[in-house]
Image: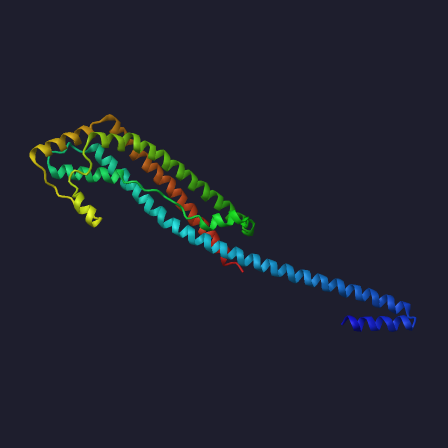
Length: 262
């Protein structure tokens, strides 16, 4: 093609047709400019298409992570409710007399004591921020909600650590100092099978010691305050998680809407 243009140009110059040559030259420049513009447009379209593919991939990853978080958060909330109700139950229970009552109370105490953390799935979000690709997410509502959810996760983490310190001081330390832990647990069976088995049996002297320990713990002011804090804080944590749950559902709905947009 350049050889054809060059031949035409040379012929026009030889024939001394200046006007036609100028018109031709301008036309050639216009064609070159149009070609450049088309090439730039095609390149821009390709880059936009590639960015959209990356954005779609990240959005799908975010959605998958958030769906995992919904399940984990729901389990975490159920655990908080079990702890709250168990703490309230202990505060109103009568002093144990029989081995069965000691065992029942021990089981309820363990329901309060068992510790569980909520660890959100942030793999895709970490990749987005770490790679500097957060700008690929073009929907401002999604980015704002991502920030909101991340802030809620951070608040839950801080509150978990706060609760853990209270558990250590008011519940774990007091219980360890005042009563035998898991008095009816068959530790040999647990060591061999990794499953806990309990045998509710004790001599009269052993039962007297266990009931005295349990009564002393249930009437200990520090321990009772710890149970009250456990009831209040686990309920408060449940509310925080419920708000996060609703925000995650909203964010997933926004992502679905964006993924379904051509």
